[in-house]
Structures are given as structure tokens and as C-alpha cells.
Length: 266
Ligand SMILES: [Zn+2]
Image 1 (spheres, rainbow, N blue to C red):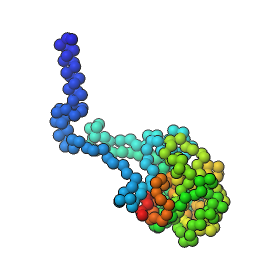
Image 2: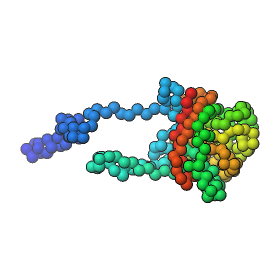
Image 3: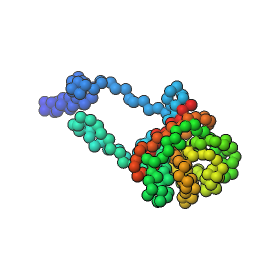
Image 4: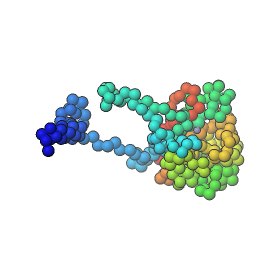
């Protein structure tokens, strides 16, 4: 081994130490005053001693999106970054309004409502927050009028989260969009509008209507501009029953849909 080669090896070693845990690295870090050992962040689904459930799906590149086999893909870039010499990290996000756990406004399906301003900003926060029933839909069926009848949802119930086979199949955790998801059939939507007091309709995949619905269920739900549709909810590992729901979309002027953070409180 030549002296030059030995010197090269030493340089390499110093490089490794400088960007890892060696004394050189410690010296560099003190300039930035960063904590030497930062424990990895904890990511949770349940808070407050089992009283508060996060029913929002995490927005990540593998989140399924409508009609795509690839999932959401990259949605966030750092337009400023400490690694590249900036004082701060600044993320820029780019998302379709109907990404992951999200809310549909009346303007999503009606041009005249969109023109009149029935966007996400105009939604009634009173509907999106308050007592809610989490119910299990029979796993053998879409949500038809027959199924709606069988659920026997008490009169006066304003908010219902419908848990279906989609949750059992973990569809929202699979990157590839699955057209076989369970949702409302046209007669189920019509029955709900005509026979219940439900104004918050929550479902556990990317649409409240089946893939072959052709828009008729959305048109039925949104026609009176008093029902709010919450899609893509994460309802795993929560007992059916009565909760308080809190669902808050971003206040986006002109948006027909928006991702939302939704929680259930026991
Ligand atoms: Zn939507």
C-alpha cells in the first residue's frame, strides 16, 4: 500500500466521521445548535387515553387516487431547505382537492352551484362538527335503499359514518385504485335524502357512490345543498357507536373539494 493510498483512505474516513457520529460531526452540529440525538417522531392514530381517534388517512405518495394504479406519488417539495443552506425548511404541496380523506362541496357536481359560490369555504361547519353515529354496513352489499332501511338509524341523527367492506379490505391503504369498492347505490342515496335527517354522510373509500354510479348519487345528495359528503375516512379499529365528529377542511375559495382532518371523540 502506498503512502498516497493510505492518505486517501484517511481522508475517506474523516469524511465518514464528519457526516456521521464522530467528534468532527459534533463540532459541526454545535454551530447549528441541533440536539445530538433526536428520537424519531411518533405517529399515532389514537390520542387522549383512547378517547380521540384520528379518522384521517395520512397523505403520502402511496395514498390511492381516483382511477390511478400509481397512487398519489410525490406531492411535496421543499422550496427552501436547511440542507441547501436556507435558514428554514419550507414545503410546497400540490394536491387535487379530492385527495385522501376529503370533503365534497355542492359545486363539485353542479355548475350552477359552483358559479354561485357553493365551494368548500361556504360549507356549514355546524354540520361538520357534532354528534355522529359510526355504523357497520352489512358486508355483503352496497348501500341500497334496502340496506339503509335495515340499518335503522334513529330519526334526528344528523351525522353518520358508514363503515363498509372497504375498511375490512384496507382499500385506502392500497396504492392501486380499486373500482370494486362498496358505496351508495342510487336508490340508497334517494332513500337517505327522503327518509332521514342525515346531513353528514361519511364513507370509507374515495367516493360515496359506487364506481358505476355515473354521478346520480352525488347529484341526489348535493341537490339541496344541505348534505356534506366526507369521503376516504379511516374507520379501522374503532367500535361502532355514538361519538362526536370534528371534520375541518381547508378554507379554500373556489374549491369544489378539499382534504380535511377528521377526528372522532368518545
Ligand atoms: Zn370527492
